[in-house]
Image (tube, rainbow, N blue to C red; front, side):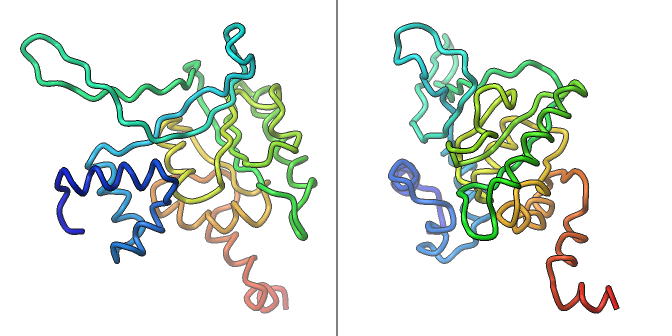
Length: 220
């Protein structure tokens, strides 16, 4: 695909609604993931975040659990002006400075509950310091995804695409990757290159210590 024709934009909407990631679309279109992301944003194909209705519509839910979806935004028409698409996000922000914490995702060999413990205590410490905490994790069986651990919780896959989507909505002062284990650590360099502020240990230092051969030479 070279041009954003109406047909291609409609195809892009359908692909995202069917769950295709940017990197999968990039492979089909022979582009990079960031090129597809830029095309998608240029076309207005953006995710919106919805609140999980924990009360089954019986009464209003206030638990800040969010998930993303791709819905074609309705048009708002004002007299004398062209129709404008309005993305209906349900994210409730407080206005306080925000720090995002990346969780560990699914428990598996080499990555378990010890990282979740670290994420929880990071959230508690940041809350005591006056920050809103945003937890990103895809594992509902962990303590970090409890309703009272963070200010807002996003049930999203820990991928480059999904994290950038949340960063663009939340605009955090920084992102903490060091407490979630291998999954967020592997994303640190790419996130920093995309302009995401990484708090704590620099991605370059993380990358060096993850390189066993380099770390062995450094330790000698």
